Image (cartoon, rainbow, N blue to C red):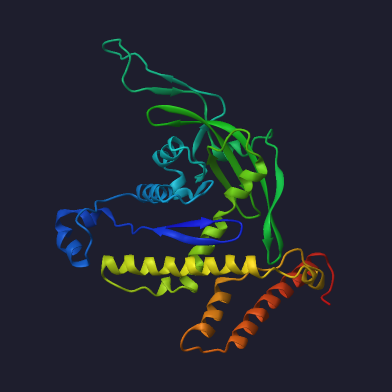
Length: 332
């Protein structure tokens, strides 16, 4: 499990946890836990519980962020959403299509028991629940096409709609939230969010869509930083490999930020390549430069720089070609 920090400029891992299945903490697995070095103080925790621990650590370390994004494994966990709301953390939680919400505020009722005629200790929610997928088919929803970010084919756009709904939580607790719906050509995503009521739809759409960059962090760690090559039997080895991977990711993040500040992109290149944006340094680009800077370089500094320039130019030309094809114009 991993926590990634995403900003408009960078995305990088900042924390991680190893999920250990429940049967590892049974008595018959004591020897196995000792063999791999699992700490005695560890006990079974679900993935949402471990996720909440990582979020708390980020807050304690003073790392600034605006919202927490979660896929449906975490987003459907009511306890996790309650914890974040009580901590005043804005969240965007993907939920399954069968998640139930209320369009009108329901009532919490304690029905009378049959035998004694006194109020029951178990409350009942009185109201008409709707699955979020049925809410998404409401004809009164207002859909808006929002441009999210540039990509290799031009710009990524998606349709968004939202409405205020009531959600019943254990306690019982009733809370009004946003149901944000994103519609792409191949799928529809449903998101519950405790964002303030006056939050703009464009801002909610942008924040929810940053999950792409979280996945990008995972891919960079595996493809460029060696995470997929990890092989070990000890718990501490896993922690060491995680720490080194995060350090490498953070180093590349600082390098990219430093280059953005010191080496401004030439605006005339936008006109030359007939594009609206130019690509930033990728993790792979920084890795090529490091190959030239390390004590035993495989490339000269000039060769490494030329590889990076060639890669950026090819990406820009590829984007230009796709834009021309989208407009029905032949390549120059």
